Image 1 (spheres, rainbow, N blue to C red):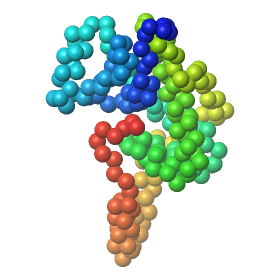
Image 2: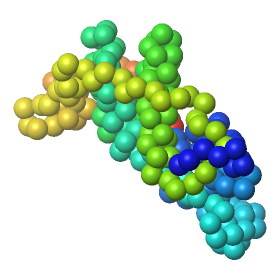
Image 3: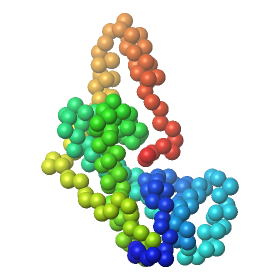
Image 4: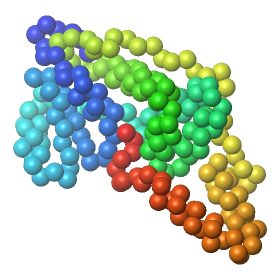
Length: 216
């Protein structure tokens, strides 16, 4: 990337959104003529006109490569490692284990506004670093440098994130589920209706994850 006064200034907020939104059927492009971000969704027939424009305008549009789900999961792991409160860190370790990790992670942080705000700052910083690295690899002219400047990497925790592993090589979620089953099996049958009622209450209370919501 190089800065030229004759080049357009990108729509930086739209560009940020495109880089953080990782979905297989969504594709975003930076228009080097206007600085706008053009987004196409495979399942939207009304985007066909935009597809045709991009195909016919060789050299005008640059495909934006969003941060992968694996990369954004790593950001989440790094943040969890930096949480100073032991109890919250343990809850977050369980939250990010298995399918639905991004949604559960956010749900836990809803009860911790200070750490939630810190997460958004932390994640935004890493996203800007990712975008800057991508821009460096691109041979294109833009009207200005990114408004966030050149952020520094957050310090890595002294101790890597530890995810408790059960005696059978299970992850933390599988270990807890096995322990719950063992406790239920040990209960007298007379107590099971109360246990089932409470478990149903917890299931209905838990937020659901809609398809395509991860990562966010």
